[in-house]
Image 1 (tube, rainbow, N blue to C red):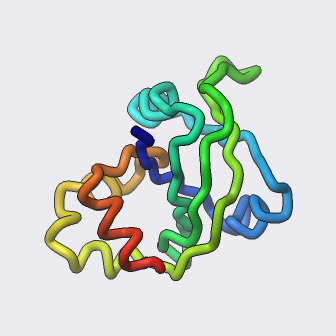
Image 2: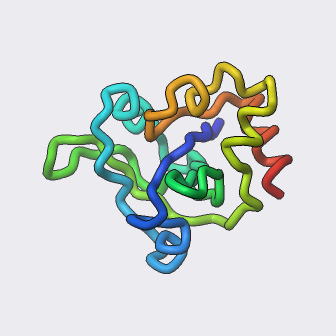
Length: 130
């Protein structure tokens, strides 16, 4: 069964628009040990919510993992990701207002850039972003 992850990016550096234009990218630059652990657990076919940080602070797109995790030139795990579709933005403010998200990494560990999304929250996110 596919898993879902949330990948954070600063849209002024790399946005969901950029991912759509390129068609595929290497998700790199992630150094946090817990975030690295999540990348190492990814499989081809897993889905990813793209979250814009900065002024937007919202889930804005859905993508898919298209490679097994591999080490880059910095000896960090990376995966290749392709876009699936743009989503109706779900803001951090909206997420924090829902009690279901109180224990979610996005709320508890706001600096974490890659995280697994529990199944019950996947359904809620998909409902709110369609």
